[in-house]
Image (cartoon, rainbow, N blue to C red):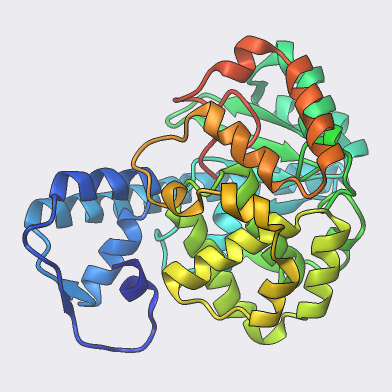
Length: 355
């Protein structure tokens, strides 16, 4: 159904087997946040046989995504004005950036926060701007720890809807110490741009967007979220003709995320039919022992959050080098144990929230 919803060309409606476990299907749809996309597929008559109650829920999820998006866009325009007034550069990541640049219609890409990439030395200035706009640190007692270990921190503002801004200046654990994919000048040199109200806002594009989406799906979310796979599919569809795959491979090697790129690209190829050059996958292929131990297929179709012990296991496998695995393990061990071990609801550790 996701393939049909993402397909541009007209084709006959595909009937859905009436013996499906509709309760399980709905749990999957809710967990993977793809109800709006499936509603779009229904609207375009891409598949039939869906019970009216299920259809109504998907349509309601799309309406909610549109309403949430409008609320966030208003806040984003306000923040862009404040950041520009203080000469704080930023790049919009994930949710709204992808919704505007990759998805074919409004309300198809749900998101619940605003992710802003800043330069690390701009953190205090950005924090001041957010505080002046009514935002408060989510976990004040963990601010120094998260800044040191994870290269991000979250701020919340109460209102008609809870509004969250995530400030990022790195992609992977800072303590892991690979070169920073988003922290170096490469991310800032050639960004794309979108309009949000009267503001022109920078977003990622090309090879760096593709690599970032691979890392986001594989490492940050341990393959848990088909909407993230749809992000990757649509980015490939939009940018496929302009991707310099040699440059992509060089970047994956430099930023030590070859295995994350391999598993993300093979997943989007096998499940959604994206075109990825075989030579690229061969160049990224992990060692045999990693391929043997990686349960990718079981992670992609879960209907609930990944248990934290499994999450940690997957993240260790995705680190390209053994020495970095040991360094990451030591940093996790040094971090706050209650914060590390809490799972579910609000996010309590890096990379676990909906974005």
